[in-house]
Image (cartoon, rainbow, N blue to C red; front, side):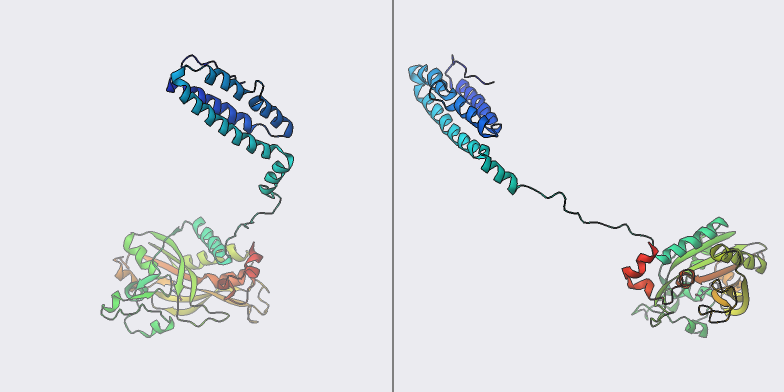
Length: 364
Ligand code: PHE
């Protein structure tokens, strides 16, 4: 508890020190006089005419000061009295119950108000299918390769054995980057129409044996409708080694489809054409909804066409310096949205792109 010291030394430094100790005590006590009773005690202790601390200051500091110091000490004591008056009246306000209550009221926060709730997101259904596909092929020893979405004509077409002006290019309605005419055709940029260019990029950078899958976004100049979208996803696969046969292709895809849709599904391979595979096939699975009897999703046919595939055309090996006499391989490509529509019985591909929570929440 603070007591007023007797002063021996009336030098300015000693006065300063005594004054600041007093002020500190005064401020501390003012702050803890929080109810009317404590305030009353606080005020009496400091302000009482008879023997209050400020009266003691008057007696022990001012009256005891030697003549030459009187003026300085007088000013100091006056300043302390003024400061004390202000602190006391502030403390009085705070301590009077209405003052404190008002202050507390003005500072309350309602901690019972609910905060902003952020719901956890989930994986988009298309990415979920892609993850499942990837895990099926990773278990078979495939690794993942990626390539750019803005591709050159060379990788998207030429090295995949689509000669310039070949009509097969027309089957992939291509979105070209503007103002590329000054470049040679092979360097002109476009949005890749399939993930097959990653086959070329992989074989350019890696010696056989190769086993990769290439997931990614592709673009075509298609008007959006229930089964078409100008942007969608594909999963490409490529396997090259010595002695790879069409039997390996069939076994691999049959296993993958059974892993995805259950061991009861059958696969069927029908002849088709792609410039970069020979022979080429369209692969269908028996309808997982009706088991092959015929229903709406399979358009009563019992089969659903899901992917394109084939044995790598020897001409493609020529573009990447692989020896077609020693090597063989197969490739396949599938549309991820289409597979997702099958898996979750979604009848409009556009649902994947609207971002409508009512649709997406069903996958949470
Ligand atoms: N790239 C072909 C397409 O988009 C699919 C495919 C990939 C076919 C690999 C054969 C081999 O239609």
